[in-house]
Image 1: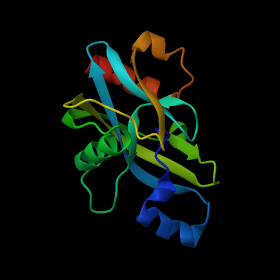
Image 2: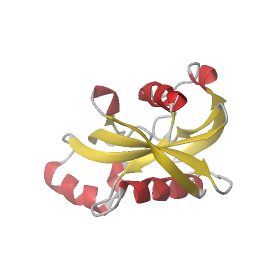
Image 3: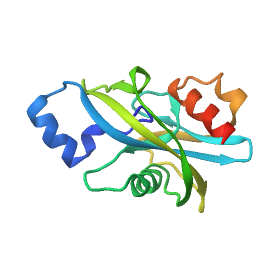
Image 4: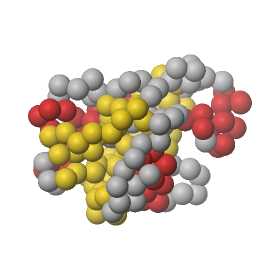
Length: 156
C-alpha cells in the first residue's frame, strides 16, 4: 500500500505472482492511524524512502482488524488497540509499483489505533518512525493518499 508492505513477502501473493508475473494485482489492505493528541505516527519505508502510515495486505482468511494489529507489530514491534474504522480508500492513489517490478492496487481500510507499547521499527522495512502534527506532514516526502486519511481521522 504504499504504506510500504512488500507484497511479495506473502506466500499467498507469491503464489499468484508465480502465475501472473509482475502484472497488476488488486489486494485488500489495512492502515493504522496511530495518534497522540494532534500528532500522528508515520514510518519512512525502505523500499520508497517516503513517509506513510503503517499498514499492509490482509492475508486470506484474516480479519482486517487482526491484520492491522499484525502489520503494526511486524513493522514497529508495538502492540495496539483498535478503536474503530476511519474509512476505506482505493483508486489511483493506492497503486504501487515496487522496485522489483510488481504492480499492486490496494483497497485499504483505515483504523483508528492507540499504542499499548513502545514502537521500534523493523529495520528491513522501516528506515525510521516519527511523530508529526498534520501541518508538518504536508512538508514531508510522503505517500499523498495519507492526506485524505489524516483529514478524515481529524474529523472523527
